Image (cartoon, rainbow, N blue to C red; front, side, top):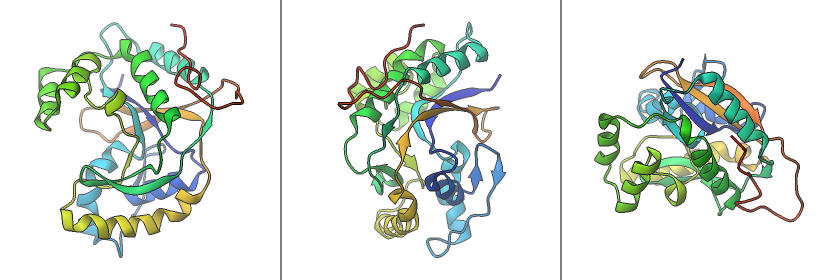
Length: 248
C-alpha cells in the first residue's frame, strides 16, 4: 500500500500537452522515466531545477482530490474500484482553452475561461471519494494553516481535509514554484511561447488518474488511468449531469 493517494487529471499520454509538461519538469510520472530538461533560454539548469523541484516531485497534473492517506478500514482494491466506478459515471467533455498564467505568485497552465464542467468534476471527486480519506494529522493541519487561511478555507479544511476545494478550487497544472515579482512576467511569456503548440491542440477531458506517493517524500507515480464511460448527452453540461454521483 502506498503512503498517499491523489486523484488528478493528466493529459492523455499521446497529447502534446503531456509531452510538453513532462519535458519541462524533467520526469514522466507514468513510466518513471527521467527526462533531461531543456530549460534554456528560459532559465539556467540550476535555476530550472530550483523552480521545478516541487512540481517535478508531484508529477505533471491538475489536482482534483489532493493527496491523502487511506482510512484505516479502506483497502487499495476497494478504492481502485470506487475510482473506476466514479469515472465510468462521467461523460467526456471538451477542455476549455488553456493558457500559461500567474497564480498566487507561481506559474501554471490554467483555463483561459470558466469551465463549469471542470468545477463539477472536482467537486464530485472530493465528495464521492472522501469516505476513503483518513483525517489529516495535527502536523498536516498546521502545515495548511501556515499559508494563512480564510474562515471559509478553515471550514473546508475541517470538512474535506484540504482548504482549496469547492469554490476555492482552481484548475491548474503547476510549472514553477513561487517567483520573485520581477521574474513572473518574463518567465510567463517564455513558457507561453514554449507551450503554445501544445495548448493550441484540441483536448478532451475523458479520464482521471490515480497518482500514488509510494513512501513519504518520494516522487508521485501515475498508477492508473480511468476512462469516462457515460454516453454523451446533447445540449450541454451541468453540475448534476456531467458527472453523476455513482452509487456506493
